[in-house]
Length: 239
Image 1 (cartoon, one colour):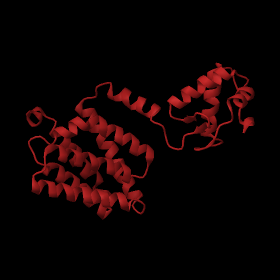
Image 2 (tube, one colour; image 1 turned 30 degrees about the horizontal axis):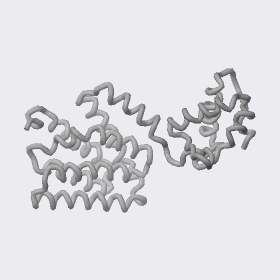
Image 3 (tube, helix red, strand yellow; image 1 turned 120 degrees about the vertical axis):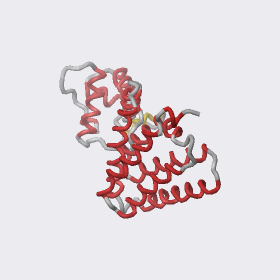
Image 4 (cartoon, helix red, strand yellow; image 1 turned 90 degrees about the horizontal axis):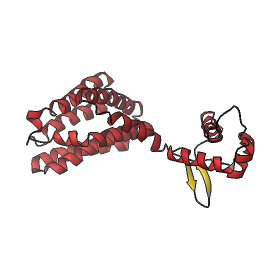
């Protein structure tokens, strides 16, 4: 594999290494799980110092592209790393988006998730069963008078199961980040009600998935996100 590394243009030594490896990944000449050549091989192949290779590996590791295993070499990560993705998403949320921004983000994203769930319908029976069990559990909680924290945990689990049922690791990871960020606002929807609004929303989504009715996806998500948005108003969130 040492012939993979050849300098191509005038760049800093660290950039040469970083960009060479990124290009090899794009070209699929390096694949998830592949072991990289040694630090010395990369250094000689690209005509840069071993120190530059070492620094480049730290950068790529921070981005979640490679896995440095002490005593065992360096490997291309087999699953997408958190670093770059989380930094991008954090930069969005750090801008303090208002409710309308968040409404639009959830609306677009959750429509796509439901469409993917139907695309992967033959592969996600386990996740769909878990979603149905989640809604059934919520109904039972409503009848037995579950405490607010139990209702919140059930709600968050429903959304994480939706992401998993999409059968797309990147989509699932982004959606989980969004849900983690929105956890306080999702929790606030359980004030002054005992799960009935959430049950109506989630049951509508489950019914559409079970019926494989793509024509009603936008309607269901508009209802879901609209309910969440409405429950953020001061009169609904005040103790």
